[in-house]
Amino acid sequence: MALIAYDNVDAAAFEETRHLRDDDLATWRAAIGRHFEPRTGARLLDLGCGTGSWARAFCTWWPSVEVLAVEPSAAMRERAMFQPVVAGTADDIPFPDASLDGVWLSTVIHHVPDLEAAAREIRRVLKPDAPVLIRSAFAGRHEAINLFRFFPEAVAVLDRYPSIPGVEAAFATVGFATTGCEPVPQVTAPSVADAAAALQREAHTPLQLISDEAYAVGVVRLQEAARTESGPVVDALDLLVLR
Image (cartoon, rainbow, N blue to C red; front, side, top):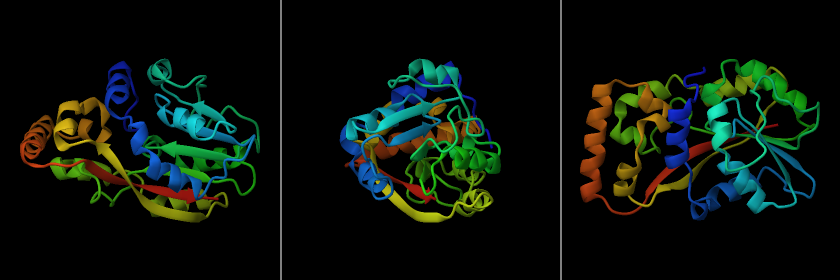
């Protein structure tokens, strides 16, 4: 389901608005650490790394781990804060058989047009019993994501994303089974006002795929909430782990 092919405008908006602050990554570090052992010399691939914020975080957390990055979009590769980033796709990963100790995909799975082909390729490059760690918003699981509170029309877009059972079924075709699935809370913005000020439609696939009218009404909802709501914006995305 390749919904968006990131061009320069999309990549710039993603770079400016979609990176979590370093202080807000602790919940993800803990969640990933429950499933990936960062031993010396382990090789972790950030597949569909975008502008490289997760690859950079992994290097900061685990200096003894070799972090690798693959990204299909040239515009994203050009902006990456982590280097090197190699061109590649989920069904064409430029690494040898059984060479990786883990594969991480963050908000990528809905851009993969053939999940079974991706599962076969990920199986090829992973060592036996190594994890696939998928961070995503999945179909049918919008309640913990504030974006859909302000843009309810975008729920219909999310429902076109892969579901957790759908991903599990695709990966089961090559022997993967689920070993973990949990919602992970994160501070997405310091406040609703900050979220409103930083919002760029081009950075969010669900917002690009609703009508201009629905987007405009949602922006008004967000701005009205910014005037009355205090406290950080806390969302929860799912971490699905397969082995």
